Image 1 (cartoon, rainbow, N blue to C red):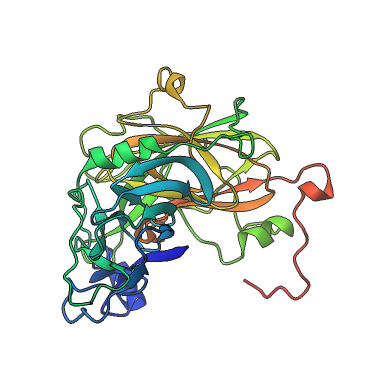
Image 2 (image 1 turned 30 degrees about the horizontal axis):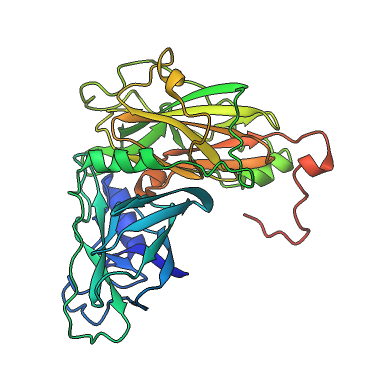
Length: 400
């Protein structure tokens, strides 16, 4: 197996850029390049020596473990001249399917098989962002090289054909092909009965800020709540019953229903700040619909849930229709993963069983949005036995 880590690179110190942006109330600049295994590749200035190269032998099959460790960009990835067979996402087996391009969001992993069955030469492996909303991204292409053994380095690699950065159809088609293996050995244990139905709107906003450049601070919210990080660890506060750290009144639905994906709303709905969590019973089954909104702009959001895998039972473009859309859910072999993209101007429905007691974050995996408060947490209560309860912290646990 070979590992390919996609990342981002800034020529300046990232923390300095973030601190400056927060003071101004605006986003930090986009990255200066993307990287594969820490190297940007020859399409960037002075970087021909900084290119990751993977040697293969003709006739052999290779497993590539691809990780998107970029902070803010979903990526299309392809290998010139070679098909990829997707076999695993987020460490869960899938029904194998062949594709020329994959889409991978920050926090996601994808394992593919490739056969070294093309003429012996050198081929570029390339990635660039997918963004189908009017949001600035680092739109440059990062490359690495698939190098057949015995071929000299002087042979120029060929380039794969990547989709246009705003090609929504390719993104939707790819995600719709993902299916759980659902075999006797690896069954898809999809919750068929749901104890809690949750509906969370995903929005951006601009809150008043007297010290910021334009008098506003960009924010993000779930159900119109911008999450505020506490000064005490949430799990410690929960376990030791420390009062005043968080509330368990996170709403199951947004405060005001509206045409979520209609004409752009120029500001927001008065985002409230809070450290508010949603308490769920141990072993209960949860269905959560994440609905993108046109607050400032629609955008694709990859959401990651700590502590659980979940099943992606449905997704669509536009507003979720609770009277019609559930009838189209895939409850047989939906993909199982821990990070899922909410389509731009659309929705995604997930189901999971809350069988892991503790406090578990759920957040957008675009670092910029998480920083702006696009996160919340679930408090999963203890079960009836010690095996179903939080274990005590170690005696030498350092303070948070």
